Each structure stands twice: as C-alpha cells, then as structure tokens.
Length: 605
Image 1 (tube, rainbow, N blue to C red):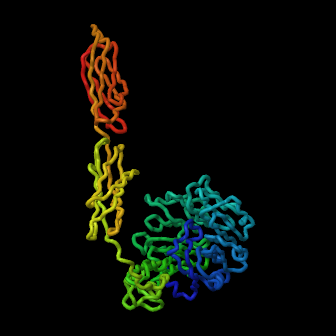
Image 2 (image 1 turned 180 degrees about the horizontal axis):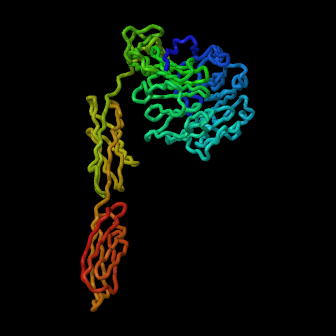
Image 3 (image 1 turned 60 degrees about the vertical axis):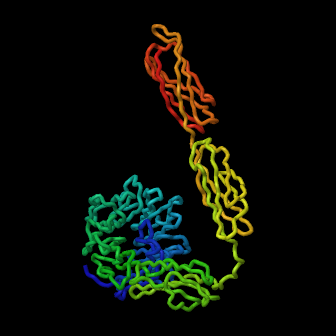
C-alpha cells in the first residue's frame, strides 16, 4: 500500500465539526468528545467528483454526520440541518431537501440520499421514483442506501426496505438488529448479540458466507462491492471476499492496530479504517484516496469513502467542559477550581491560573485560592491552558461576584453546649424498666440550667436539668427499635444543643411452655380420657395469649393446635386413646410481646 501524509496533500479541505456522527449507516453517532474537523481529499481532476471535495463556505459551525457518494458529500449539523454538495446535476445534490432542522444522520448512494430524524422518521430523495415514498408509520434507528433502495432497522430490531425493489432478496424474519450496511451486491445486518447475517449475490466473486470469528462478537459492519468487513469486540478487523489490495495488519493487539471505525466505497475496491490511537488507513486501488494519516498529534475519529474522494473526521483538541469555581468570594474564604476537561490528552499536564478581573494573580496556579484583602472588589476566575502538538486550548470559568471584605463581627456568641444521651438498659425485653439520661456540658464557666426534651420514637417528654443531668423513666414500650435523642433548651449563659441519635431496642420476652398429663378410665385397650394441662410462663404482667401446637407420638399419632389465654393456660383432651407410652412435643408460637418456645412431656396411657 502506498503511504502518504493526507494533511500535507494540497487536495485536503477542512471543516470545523462538533458532536459528529459516524459512518453513513452507523446506528450510534460518535460521542461529543470526538468532535473535530472534516477533511476531504481525492481526485480533483475527475470532473464528476471534484466538486464534492471543497467544503462549501456556507457550511459553518458544528457537524454531526457526514457521508460520501460517487459525486457528492453530505453533512448534518448539530442543529439538525442538512447540506449536500458536489456535482450540481446529480440528484442527490440538486434534490436535497431544505428546511430540515431535526436530522441526525445522512446516507448517500449514487443518485439518492436519505436522512434519519431525531424521532426516527426518514426523509429520502433522488433519481429513484419510489425513494421518497416513505411509509408514514416507518421509524428507524439505523438506515442505509444502495441505488434506489433504502434499508431501515426499526426500533424493535426488525429490518424493512423502501423505494425500489431490492436487487437481491432480503431474508425473512431478521430480528434483534442494531445496524445494517449495504452495497450493490451484498448486505450485512448486525445483531445485538454480535452475530452477522449476510445476503446478496455473487456477481463480484465475493463469498456471502460469514467466517468463523472464534467466538468473538462483531461490533461494526461494512459491505463493499464484492467484499465484506467487520470489527470484532477485541478491535481487530476481519475482511473476506474480493478485498481491496494493501490491507494493513489491524489485529487489535495495540492502540495502533485496534479499529474503532470502518468505511467502504460503494463502487470502488477501496476501504478505510480508524485505529484507537487516532491513525487512519485507506487502502485499495484508487491512488487518489489511499494513504495513512499520521500528522502532528492529530486524531481521526471516522472515515467515509466515495468513488474518487473521501472524507474523515479529525477530533479537535478542545475543552469539553469549562473550568468552574466554587466557594464564597469573601476575604478569608477559600475558592476551589475544577479544571476544564479536554477532548484529547495534552502533551503535558494542563496548567491553571487564577485571575482577578483580567489580570493573573501572581503565583496562584493551584486549584485552591485563599481570598485576601488585595482582592476586595475584584471578580475572580480560573483559567486552564493545555497544548497538544501545534494546538493550544485556553478556557476560563465564569467570573465570581466581586470579593467582599470580612463581614462585620456579630456579638460574642453564647458558650456552646454538648448533650450526650444514654439509655439503660439499651437493649432488653418488653416489660423491663428503662430510663434515659441526658448529660449537658458547656464550654462556659457557669453550670447550665433549663430543660431537656427527650424524644423516643414518636413520644416526647420535657424534664428539668439538675446539676447538668436530666432523667426520664420511660413508659412501657412495645417490641421494636426506637430512635432516642435529647435537646437542651439553653439558658441565658449557654447555647442550646441537640444530641446525636441513639438506639433503644425492645425485644420479646422469653417464654416457657410446659404440660402435665392426667390419664383416667384405663381399659385393656384404651385410656378413656387423657387430659393435658398446658402452661405458658413469661415476664409478670405480660399476656401470654396465643396458640400452642401439641404433637402426640406413640401408639396413636396426632397434632392439634389450641389457644392459651392471657394467663397462659390451656387444656387438650384425648378420648379413647390407645394404651401405650406417649411423647408430646409442645410449641408455643409466641405473640407480639413473647417469644416462641418449645417443651415436651411423656405419659403412659
């Protein structure tokens, strides 16, 4: 492959670009930080394509998407406007729509063009009579063109076509798609799972089967005339078919060989790729287009190929966010700066400088600034300066308000106080007596007086402070966790204060379930009556109301559940119980205040 420095070529035309889009069929535009300039180059002696190389003077500002056909170049600005230039007699140029303000992506083919709107609608134009007849309900997330046929990936991942009848049949039931790329003899559809479907015909001797990628996923697709190209998830380039000569070894093993963007010429055996380190490679049979971009710290983001000309997006070295300053512009206060973020890594770390009005503050280059008396009445800002190659980017924060002097000193404040709170016991069973105590200390010399307001959960109580302490005997609390705090009212000599929050935990009381058996009326085969008397015991004053599960095992087996009353008493009676030895397992289920417990007893019937 013949190598040359594209930016050194006289045929290169440049346009400032921002928030750029990717190749014409890309489903996802390039991120904003890859914004930059568009360069165009090619065979200026070719009477058809030469008009597509110079960038029109009325195309200014930021551009989001670019595309190239054999005789035209198209662009979409960040405010959604569409511009197409080139051979004035070409339909994709002469019939390009005006007045569009919400376009996001443009695609071109010989004689036709289309744009994708922000809401998924499509506008198309050109020599094909059917190309502009877009179904009213058609919405898309990616589009592509070949001849007079348009291809659209719907938001649900299915594929549809519009315009002229496709030159080759489209497979039925393509689903879960994210992108599509088409040429005169083949189409590649990219699925969300990283697989590819290919279809078309073999007139150009390019096989339509998809190679084995060794389990790697495909993340980008491009179809050329007689050949196909994909980028795998490791950044390597894989191509097959009647490939353009001179393909570089882009194996994804380093930033210089990891591919981030690809493009193919619809009619020429020419292909292009961009590597992660910002280099661009264009190879194939058209010497007016091929070469390698390697120039002075520049970084390419995307490339688009026509028949005899090409365009590339070169990331601009610029500030993505401006510096910011936080803090109060007042004498004695500290201002803090956040430096600008940059689109590319500078040659050396960016430098910072504080300014008072338009004048730099000598020696103040750190990200913090202590405001002193010399700055009173002046506005303050922070500027970041960075250099990459021949480019220098300077950016500035918004200026603060005028620096104020030290504010008038208020009267001497009251001595501060501190409240500490303790609960005893902090964790115990329901029914346990508890007290919460607050201790108030002061930075002053006089003992604090006043009151303390305790808060336990949603309950409050106010208690006088005596010798720096106040105590509240808590009422009975239900089982649960409670937030405990205390607020000191303050007095004429001591400032008020509030304690930190403590936690009081009320647990369930333990229980004990027991039973006794009384057997009466024994015969040779049965005991006519067996009465079990059950007792649940716990903390005095708590209700034991609940249920007890009684599981009987022995000559007869059965399980019953009975209720115990508030005093914890219950009876279970069995009649005509088979003679023999029995074991009874008792399980008390507990209630809101009492914990679960188990017990057992044995008897002989």
